[in-house]
Image 1 (cartoon, rainbow, N blue to C red):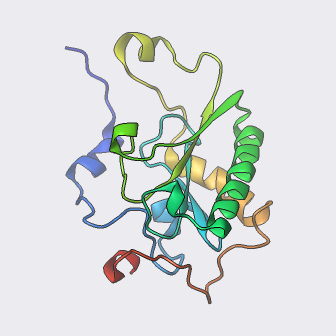
Image 2: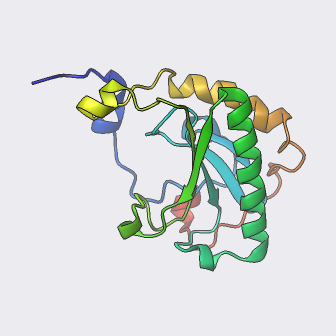
Length: 184
């Protein structure tokens, strides 16, 4: 039997599993670094995937707890699209990726791991990024730790194109459908 050592996964394996939606954020930004939240907009936010397909795997989520893109209002939809465009630019600039998969898996049958709270994925791609390990052993290698990627990406969202209109500590983003314990 082959073994691949991934000691950082023990925290997930042994740690408590959330009984609330991981995309329903607390009102304030105190847990943003721990949760890997890079940006809070008026109606949507950017978060890194804790179990990424590639380095730089981001997700853009509405604050409202909705399952379907059809449930978004026009303002939410426009902000999400604007954020997706900016995130794609940031990923291209920072990671020098040759392509980006951008998508939404709506519903469990479509591959949504967390179907109750819709979210878009942005996955940087490079020619040949499916190395021999992925092809022969169904294993991917991640060349950079999540905390390091977070620290490298955070300034783009704090000082960059999205810095002009982030969520401010005095306002509370609307998270309709999330129970009070999910937002605290």
